[in-house]
Length: 254
Length: 254
Image (cartoon, rainbow over all chains, first blue to last red; front, side, top):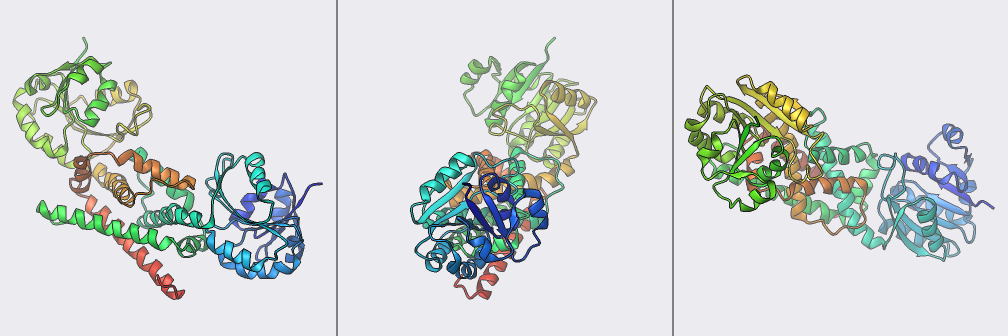
């Protein structure tokens, strides 16, 4: 029989996942902040009237901002079905892993994931895109990996929460910093472009509409992002000084 | 009869152009700093023994660093054939345009160009890539544009030296700054990548092996690059301050 899947949180990423999950599960969606009428019609999924209805599914996907995970997991813990698989999809992994391990009962399986794509980068399909997966508790991990690989066609990167956060501090930390800087400068009206510039602009375009919550999660909920930011801003300052010295050596005004 | 083309300067970009020009012209190459034996064999072109031999062709392409253009044009001016077409390919345009207008005789045509690609971004072919072209003197401009469009398949952007330098201050100034910063941080060993990151790394990869001369030309020979650099570094500082204030508001150590 088709397994039930409770999707808790139906923001930009939760909504994006629906089209990929709906073919495989009886999906129930819950979002305490949104009217989901349009979602029900578009994806033909059940809208759960209460958090309890959504979290008593065979599989529960937590797609809320990382800042809300602690409160949410405390709320759902008493209602989870023994043997259920609980997954998160947050952009950092050490903090969610600690929260899920602490708040969820011992009789559910837990798999932490980070799909390394979103509505922009996955708009033409998700096959071949990366997802980082960290086993946390229980035997369901292999099933989850097999589903992601074989049904969704994703490239699964098996990792630990620590290794994830170390790498993503750079991957997400730096791309979002650079995007924020370039959006601030506003260089959208340029015609004489190089391939390098076009790639840079495509990179910016993918993340520039991400929510402020996601940006804050990336920039402050990853324990290694401080190091990545410091190295970026230090390298920027050193380069600025080098260029300014060079200009001075050449007798230029700056 | 096939026209003769003198290519003066056979560095990374000059060499790259040879394969695209050799089918259409009797090419003579001159480079005072390089042994061109390998070039002759690979491209089946004539190696000019002296600068004079190269610069008496029907078409003369100056592919030396912008820092050497003044000296070079003074040297070739007395030898140019009346009615010859002289082109430069430098990464900035106001300065070369001024040098060529000042140093070259009134009886030659001058077209300033900036191919917005190089050996890396053009390694799979140049059709469809951008070239900026500024007419400077004489009637040959239309012929040059037609050749670039119809024979080489380039997308010709007709512009002025000033408009070129204004836009390229951002296009090249910022991509090279960002590439220098990311190469300095050294993020080459990362596996858990997003599409945004992959695009950013492809962008860096195209320019990271460019010569220091090119970098210095871009960062100091374009009169508008100071504005672009200032806006980039100011935006970086403002973002650093905003993130640091946010961390302080949240009671974090930094």
